Length: 219
Length: 219
DNA sequence: TGTTGTGAACGCTTTCACAGCT
DNA sequence: AGCTGTGAAAGCGTTCACAACA
Image (cartoon, rainbow over all chains, first blue to last red; front, top):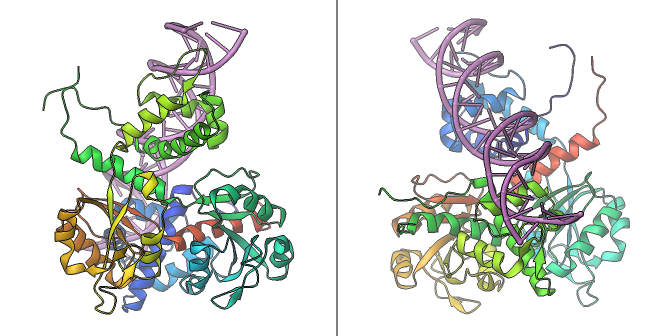
C-alpha cells in the first residue's frame, strides 16, 4: 500500500454492509462487545469468508485470534457508508405510500429524515401529513436547496413517475429511491434504486413454482 | 428422476424477467406488436446482448432479422415465472404497512391477491382492513390451507418478525416477502426476499458520498 | 490456539463477436 | 441486409485454504 487512497468497495459488498451494521447495532444493544466473522456470518446468513472479505475492504480492523470490536466496526461501516451525517429525504407523491413514508418514524433514527413531501394535485397541496405540509412539486428546486435535500423518493403513480424523476434531477438530486414499477430514464450520474414489490413477488413465484412443480418428462 | 430436467434459468436473469414483462405489457398497451433486443434493452436500461441471452433461456422465440412478438414473449415470460396462475398472499402484521398492502389494489391485477391479514394484537383482530377482516395469527395454518395461500408478507415490528416467519413456515409457506429489517432464520427450502428501505437508503448514501467527496490526492 | 486477512481457484454473469437464419 | 442465438472471452463475486499473527 502506497498512499491514503480511498478504497472503492465492490457493489456486492456495499449492499451487505448495511445488513452487517443492523446486526452489529443489535449486538451493541445486547451488550456484546466483540464478535468473530463466524458469528456475524451466522447472524447475516452468509459465509464467514465473505464477512471477512467484506470487512477487509474497510481496512484491517480485526485482531487475529480474537475477532472484531462491535463499536469500532459500527463506526467504520458508518463512516464508509456516509452515515456520519444525516441525509435529508423528500417524497414526491402524496398518495398512500408517500404519506406512509412521511409519517413513518423509522428513517430518522437511521439518519434519513423525511423533510418534505410534495404533489402536483391542488387538492393535496397544503394538506398536513404527519408534521409536514404537502408542497407544490413546482417548488421542488427551492425546497431541495433550502432544506438541503440529498435523496428523492418517488411514490407517484406510474404515469407520473418519469416526470417526478425529471423534476428531481432538475432540482439537483442525484440519489433516487423509486417505488413506481418503471425503469426511469436518468443521467448516468444519478443513482436509482428501484423498490418494486410486484417484481419481488414474481421472483418468489418463480422459485415457488420450481419447488412445487412435479416435472413432467420432456421430449 | 432420470428425465430431461426443466431448464434452470440463472438467478440474475430471473430477476430481470419481471422488468422485461412490465415493459412488454406497456408496449402491448400502446399497440406495439414487435420489438428487437435493442429496443427492449434501451427501455430496460441494459445492454442488448443481455436481453438476448436472458430471452434465450426461455427458448428460441425470436425471429432472426425481425425480432420478437410482444404477445408471445409476454406469454412465455409469464409461463416461466409461474404467472399463469394466481398466487394468494397473506399479510402478517396489521400495522401501517400491512394495512397499506392489504388495501393496495396493485397486486391483484399482477396475479398476487392479498387474501388475508392477521395480527397477534387482540385490539386489531376483527377490525376491517379494506375488504378483509384481521384474523388471529393463531389461525394462520387454517387460513393458509383454506385460502390456498402461497406467499406470506411479514410486516410486523422487528421484534415479532422471526416469530411471524416461524408461524408462516409452520403453516407450510415456502415463499416469504420480509419487510422487517432483520435476517430471518428459515429452512433452506424457503425463499425469502427482503425489502428493507433503510438498507436501500444507506446504499444510496454510499454512492452519494462517493460522488460528493473531494478525493484526496493519490500517490 | 484461534481468528484474521488475503492470494488463488472457482463459478457465475456479462459482454463480445459472429455464425445462422429470415 | 438485419437481427437473433450462442460459443468463447472477459469481468466479477464467492469460496478455499493457509500464512500471519495476537
